[in-house]
Image (cartoon, rainbow, N blue to C red; front, side, top):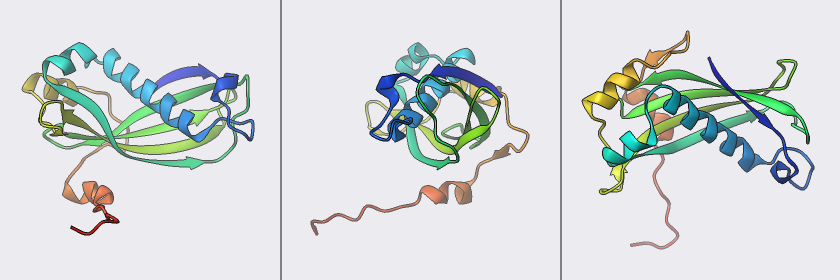
Length: 160
C-alpha cells in the first residue's frame, strides 16, 4: 500500500470548518501522481507519449470529518487494470494519526491522447510499467463489465 501524508491547512477548509470536498480530490490526485512517479511513470514519459492522466469517475464515501491542523494519511492501492493498460482502478483511504478510516474512494483512471482528445493507447514501455505496479490483495484484471459503472450518456438540455 502506497501512502502520503498531508497537513490540513486553513485553505483546505470549507464553510463548516472541516476538509472541503474538493480537497479530498486534490489529495487523491496528488497521491496518485506521486505513486505513478515513484513507479517510474513520470510526467516526462507521458508527455513524450502524448498522454495525460485523466479521472473518469471518483466515488467518495465520507465516514468522519477532518478538522484543521490534523495530519492525515492518504493511501493508494491498485484494484485492477485492463490488459491493455488503458484503464486502471484505484482505491484511496484517508486515515487520521491513529489509523481511523475517515473516507474511502474508488477511482476509474485512464489516459487521454493529448492530440486526439480521446482515451489514448499506452505504449508497450508504459504497459510494462503498469503491469509491474504493486497490486492490492483483491486485484483483478478489468473487463468491459467492470467499466460499465461509468457508462453514462450525456443528457443535453438542447435537442439536436
